[in-house]
Amino acid sequence: MNLYIGNLSYKLKESDLSKVIQEYGEVVSVKIIKDRETGKSKGFAFVEISDDAAGQKAMELLNGTELDGRTMVVKEANLRK
Image 1 (spheres, helix red, strand yellow):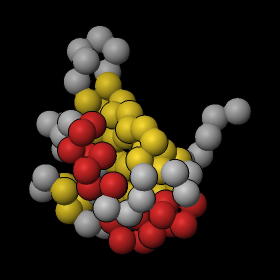
Image 2 (image 1 turned 90 degrees about the vertical axis):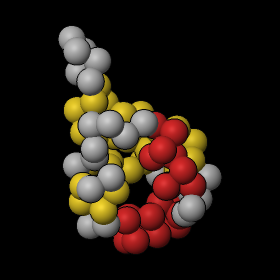
Image 3 (image 1 turned 30 degrees about the vertical axis):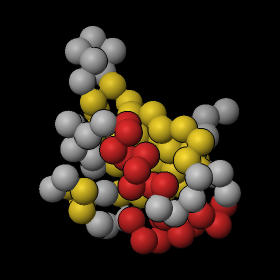
Image 4 (image 1 turned 30 degrees about the horizontal axis):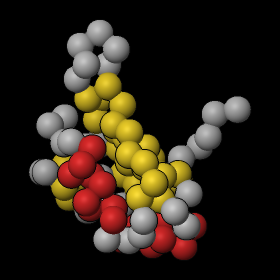
């Protein structure tokens, strides 16, 4: 399952986000989206988690919670076609 995680701190590292999500299931990949020109975080990420049940649980328990002083938005990612 792919998750969209928004409203992240611009200082947050992929490894830090991975640690938070790992509490709910096996993390396959974490990608914090960065500005092409500056290389700075845009404040959102995509996380692939190994199974759908773990992804659902992560969405339910993490959406609206605070991480590094920011309230996270966690929902299922809409995949591009």
